[in-house]
Image (cartoon, rainbow, N blue to C red):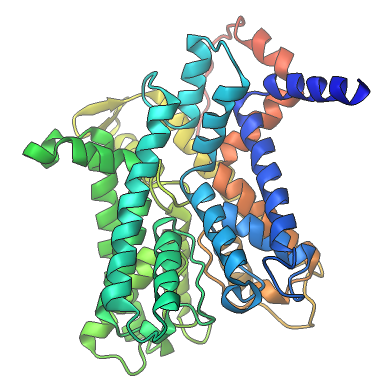
Amino acid sequence: MKFTSKVYKLKDAYKKLSVPQFTIVTGLFIICLGTLILSSPLCSSSKVGLWEAFFTSTSAITVTGLTIIDIGVDLNFFGQVFLAFMLLSGGLGLMAITTFLQGFVVKGTKLRTRLDKGKTLDEFGVGGIGRTFQSIAITAIIIISLGAIVLYSFGFVDIQNNWERLWSSIFHSISAYNNAGFSLMSNSLQDYRTNFLVNSVFIFLVFMGGLGWRVIDDIWSHKKNLSYKKLSLHSRLVIRTSLSLILFGSLGFFITESLLNSQFFNDLNLFERLMSSIFETVSARTAGFTNFPISLNSISDTGLLLLMTLMFIGASTGGTGGGIKTTTFIALMAATRSTLRGQKDVIISNRLISDKVILKAVGITVGSLLFVLLMAMLLSTTNTFVKKESFTFLEILFTCISAFATVGFDIGLTEKLNHFGQFILIVGMFVGRLGILLLLSALWQALYKSRIDRQKRIGYPRADLYV
């Protein structure tokens, strides 16, 4: 009876959680469950202990790709299958899944609660969670299957064993679409650096995953009479901003690495250099795959700074990637343009953007910057390295942005950190995947719930602030 009463109390406490709090608790539960399963002999070798499994589980659920084990060697087939399942869970949207599950826990939800759920999914309107999740899943299945078929038939043809080739195609297609960066190959995609087909498939999968299901659904709904102007403002901005970042990022990376004679373009002709520039630019927007080792010796400081900028911006809202999102970036650019022009309103494509959206964009960007800087300060001021090696602040900052933006680019620092340093990256991956505002909202609701209700009934006088 006592055990039953405790279960009911736990269930009642779970029901009282807000959507942000529910998301965080469920995410932590999934990570802990994944840690136990990955560390078991059923999934891994003796090299994978609880800590290694914990780091890998967090990286998988947050679809980051940073790892301190060799996925293709230290995990057996069952471990790799479970890891792929975790990538799907995190990539299809940790917030989407937990909100979907909350519908079974919280019964009798009112319109206001449904709207709150919609905000968690970045849903415009009061649409059902079930339909949203179904749309996300169907889109993912179609694109992942298409990528796996092409990789199996024409890409990974050097893998002689058909079953190994099939599983490698499926796993890498799942990892690419979910912008995860996990690879069964110890050197990522370096063996396929000059393979145009393999590079093109990965670029396509990463790009489609980064666009988000809402944009794909919008395009599909206009398939009979597809026109760019008929798409929603959100879809048009996402497509335009994503293509612009890829174009300018690729050209910038190509120019800097060519002019500065970095090792990244060694033994590559002009076409292969352009293809490699596009691949790294697309991958930098939260995918994490690489076809050449990333280090201070292989890439110039200017190139690393460019990759850090792309990583921080990330993918698009509703996509499988991280970062502050392309819509946040374009909202800030539009607000800056309006300020320079002396305009009171923010206009994008002849549409008035509400102050609430601009404030949210500012909050996301400032909060993300402060959190990344805090991570970098902790890593640079604490004895977090196993070996007494000297790392530059650029390497530390690059790794922090890679973790927070859930990219997974490793500059050679992750494995050399001790547990405390790796724990900083774990926290960064988790916060970056959930979103800094979601985390702060959950903490604020937990600490100042009564104060929130009180503030809704209080008005304040206006005052000027000179900036």
